[in-house]
Image (spheres, rainbow, N blue to C red):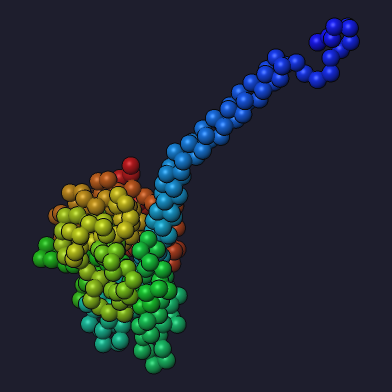
Length: 301
């Protein structure tokens, strides 16, 4: 702007000030709107992030649980093969007389838990055993002496290897190893996670009643049944050492434990799937009469 004498006027004209002010206000408004949008998007995605974190935790716990069962399963196979002792069992009379009344106590050395046996053969029953506890429920050190895994009890039509009185020889089921279930989870209410039970040293508390399904721990109808804290299904180890995720309900659930009834044998497990982590190769020292153990034969999703 020029003064009347033709010289430039110092400072800004009123119109210029108004234009600069308006531009500043507009920019500030746009900045605030942008920040608000970021904040809203952050609040909207937070639940998804939390859910993703929960899913990752659940997956990690299921993988660790599957690994526990796999290692215990191979320990059982090793126990059965070495010296032709047959599979461990909660009902084996000679083992009970020897101070090893539970199938867990019979495989301590094969699980590298030989330190649980005191001098003289007495068991340290309060020793925490991470392999025997489901990581989806509680840390083993918080419940010393506890065990989470179990089996379906035998019935007149057949049942579990793990409550046979004589000890089932692996040769007796050599052709059906991959169809015979060994171990999964005993249902436990979340209100009892802090209690050190069932006990791995005791021959009781590891068997569930015969049924046509399993239950998630949060389902109170699971009392006395197989069940686990895992969503959608529970890891289970079979007699050939492989682990599969069993759905809580499918038509052949109970038949998987029937090793005595060849007429009702079922190889296919509807809805079962392998856990996220590949299974370990069988120990070359443990072979059945036909050679190496059979590969997994469960159906996959």
